[in-house]
Length: 332
Image (cartoon, rainbow, N blue to C red):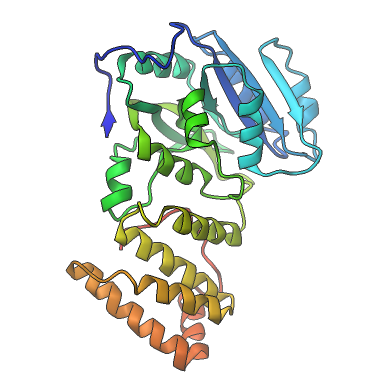
C-alpha cells in the first residue's frame, strides 16, 4: 500500500522526535561527481545526520576529493578490495549510528529538503510503514538539463504478489529505520544488480511503503555509468527467483524464467536455457495473455530440444548479436 501525507499516530519505532539519519554512499571511481553528491547532503535543511562514504577500492582520485570536504558529519572509509554495492551498503549500515538510514548514489543529488520531508512523513505514518520514498528527476550529465522524471505510485506489494511488473523504489529515494533493515536482513550480498528490488520484496512482506508525491532527487544520466554486466543481472534474477518464488506472482515468475532462458540461448548455454524454459512451463496459464505466452514458450521448448542452433540464430537476429541489459521486467 502506498500512502501520502496524512495524519496518523507517531511511529513508535522512532523514539527520538529528532532522529539521527545515517546517509550511506557507496562509491567507485566517481572523482568528478562525488563532491557534488556529498554537498547535496551537507546542505540539507534537516540537520541531524551523518554521511558515511564507502569507497569501494576506487583507482582514481575519488578518495582525495572526498578528503577535501571538511565537515565533522562526514565519515569516509575505503575498502581494500572491491566488494560491490550490496556489501558496501551493509558495511555502511554496520558503521552507522542513526535511527534512520538513507541511501545516496555517488552520481546523484538531493533537493535540500529531502530529509526534512521524509523524516516528517515517518511521524505522520502508522507503524506499518517500513520505508519512505520520493520521486526523482533525471538530469543530463553534460547539459545539466532535465530529461525526465518519475514518481512511481505503484502498490509494490500488490504488483509483487499479483501483478505483471517487477517494480521497486530506487535506493537513492529511500529512507528506512535501521531496525527495519536489521529485521529484514539488509542487502543480499550475493547481488551485484537488482539489489534494490530484492530489498523491496522483503520490505513488502512485513511493511508498507509511504510516498512523498514530489521530486526530491536528481539522478544523473548519460555519463560513464558503472552498470553491472549482463551476467550479474541474470544471476540476480536467478537468486530472486529461488528466494521469492513462493511470494511473487505467476506472471512475474514466468517473466523471470523467460529472461533467464533468453540470456542462456544468446550465450550458447543450451542446457541452462532448457532448464529455465522448463521452469516457466510449470506455471499454467490462467488468462488469455498467459495462454499466448505459454504457447510461445512451448514452441521455444520444442526448438531448444530439436533445432537449438536455428533458435539461437533467430535470437541473435532479433537482438542483433547483442544481449540487452535487463533493468527490470516489462509487462508480459
